[in-house]
Image 1 (cartoon, helix red, strand yellow):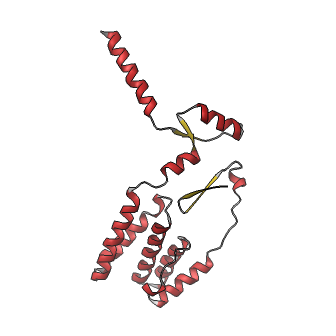
Image 2: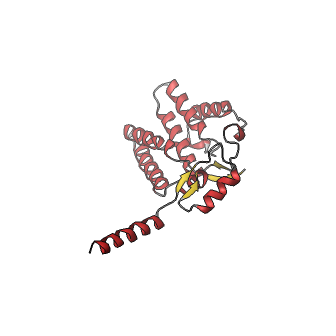
Image 3: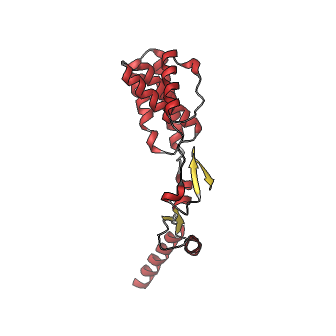
Amino acid sequence: MTWIITSICIQLFASSLATAEPRPLIRGPAASQLEFEAFLQSQSEFISLSEWVVRHRIQRKWPKEVQRLLVLAQTEFLGGSIPKARELYQELLRLGPEQDWRSPERRTMAYAALRLAQLARDEDSRREFAREAARWGETRLDADQYPEPIWRIYQEEVKKQTIQKLDLHLWQPDARYLLVDGRPYLI
């Protein structure tokens, strides 16, 4: 009887290992890229960190949550409930650090920041929210959706954003992928 229970437990454990999701592995400084890739090919329970990031970069629930919050915030804004709209736009911006967003979500984040700039009570807050919108990069916002003073502040902040050369070899000499706007690019 004990033998049967032990055998069933071993089979269940082995089957759970076979279906387990691979864990990310980072190449150590002493291993060459070739050795690292050979190890990954021989050990199915591991994948490279870059592949793991590509697989897990955006969960499906997040874009829907961004869209849901935008609809709620816009409804409140257009309905005249400014405090509730402000709260929802701020909640939307709190999602910013959660993911490596794609262009539509980045545009939504910039849009929310500019709406908060529009709803801000003082000049410093307007400028800070416009700066936040500019940080989301080139998002192709429509100038007609915002008051002219807010748009002007936003344009000033966009011009201040400097393009910096990114030398990937300084921090990761064997980097192979770069995520831009949620898309992996082989480098």
